[in-house]
Image 1 (tube, one colour):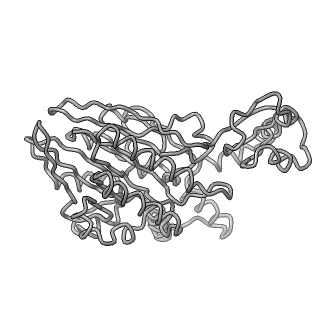
Image 2 (cartoon, helix red, strand yellow):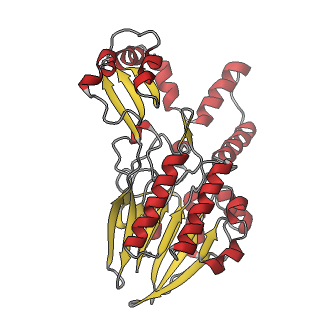
Image 3 (cartoon, one colour):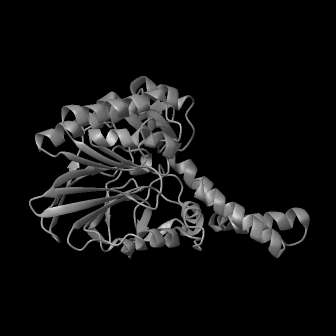
Amino acid sequence: MKFIHIGDLHLGKWICGHSMITMQKEVLFELLTIMDQQDIRLLLIAGDVYDRLVPPTEAVELFNDFLTVAIRQYHIQVLMISGNHDSDERLNFASQLLKAEGLYIASKLQKNWETCILKDEFGEIEFHLLPYIKPSQVKELYPEVKVKTYQEALEHIISLHPLDPKRRHVLMTHQFAAGGQQVQTSESEAMLSVGGSEVVDVHLFDDYDYVALGHLHAPQAVSRQAVRYCGSLLRYSFDEVKQKKTVCKVEMKEKGNTVIEQITLHPTLTMQKYSGYFADFMDEAKGLVENKQDYIAFELLDQSLIANAMDHLRTLYPNAMQLTYKQLLKEYDGKKTVANLQLEKQDDFTLFKEFYQTIRDHELDEEKASIIENILEKAKETK
C-alpha cells in the first residue's frame, strides 16, 4: 500500500505582512497531481492544518477546495488529525458525515481512538489517528490517573490501546518526539515549552510499523527511518531557507518492509536569505538574487546604516521582508551583559521568583510558589 504523509500546512499564514495563501494553493494542488500520476489514493495529514484557531476565510475555502478535488476528482481517501494550531471543534465539523466520503478526522482525544483499517495484498493495515494531546485533556478523560507531563499523558494513552500483532500499524500523531539524537526545530513553530516538558520519548512508538509525525517543520527521521516528521510544505521562517521541503511517500509491503521516499514540491516563490553589500544588491548586473519576486531577507555587510535601505531594495525586490546589518548585530551581541545572558537561560518560574523578591523584598513562600507553578504549567499547555 502506498500513501503520502504531509502535515503542518498552516493555511492562512502571514509572514511580515505577506499572505502565503497563493504558494500554499500551488503546492497542495501540485501534490494532488503527483499523487494521481503515481496512482496513490491515500493521504495522511498530521495536524496544523490551519495557522491559527480561527482561520481566515480564504484558508478555509482553500482547504475545502483541496479536499473536494482530492476526494471527488482523484478518489483519494484522507486521514487527518488536529495539531496544536487547530481548533478541535472547527476541524471536527461534520466529521461523521464525511466518513462516507472517505475523510476521517480525529480532532479531539477520546477513549476510543479514531482508527481506519485498510487492506492490500499483504493483509490489513490499521491506521491510528491520535490528535495533539495535552496532559490536561488526559486528566479530564481519566480523572483517576495522575498525569503531569506530556510523556506521562502519551504513555498512558498508548498503553490503553494494545496492537493486534497480525496487522501492520501506522500511528499518526502531532507531538514533539525526540530520541537519542537532537531534532531540528525552526523559529516558525509555536515555541516549545520551557524546560522541554512537551518532549516525549520516541520509543513510545516502537511497536508501530510507521509513525507519521507532525509538529516540527524540518523533514527528518527520529530514532529510525519509519518514524518521521514530514515537515511543513513551505518555508515559514528564514532559518528554514536551507531546508529542502518535501512530502513523504510511504510504501508498506509485508510487515517489517517499509520503503520511504521524499518528494520535492515546486512553489513558484519561496523564502530566501542573502548576505552582501547594499550597493551590490542594487546593481542588477551582479545577479546576486536568483528570483527577485521571492520573499527575501537581506543581511547587509555595510558598516553603517543606510537611509531608506528597505524602500530602495523593494524597488527591485517587491517581496523583501527583512533587513539586518550583520556587523551592527555583532557589536550589539558583544555588548550584552552577563546579567542579560543569565536571564536568557532562566526558566519562567525562576524569573518570576526573582521578580517577586525584587518587588516585595522577600522570597516567595511555598504556597504561593505552588500556585504560580500551576498557573505557568497551564499556560504552557495552551500554547
